[in-house]
Length: 161
Image (cartoon, rainbow, N blue to C red; front, side, top):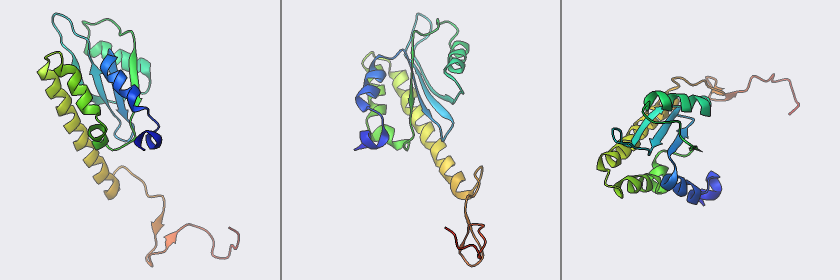
């Protein structure tokens, strides 16, 4: 049911987690991205973290080159939009699959960074939900007048629907 509702093939997500050089899972509502760069060399290991969302794939490449200057431009980047709640990453097995990829190669520090990034995303989501409820950074589309009726700004004399 999640696959039908969500519009993302989870088997493709898992395959991307297992194989991608660079993987981005972006969260439009939070304006943040979980960035996973699985590349490593003699001086730098894989990198996992939460970064601001960018406007274009080219912007992501530029940011990646700035963040990881000792690496060449990646051959490919996998972009996955995620519009569900952050906890669904855990419920659907995304976080576990990501951790498993790095645990299999003995990179326990990267596994810990995966879990830390998930916790950071959960906190960001809680703040965003609180802001939405409080109206901070949001605008009301419909409001109730003092009687509790919705104010739809239509003339009461107008009989047309």
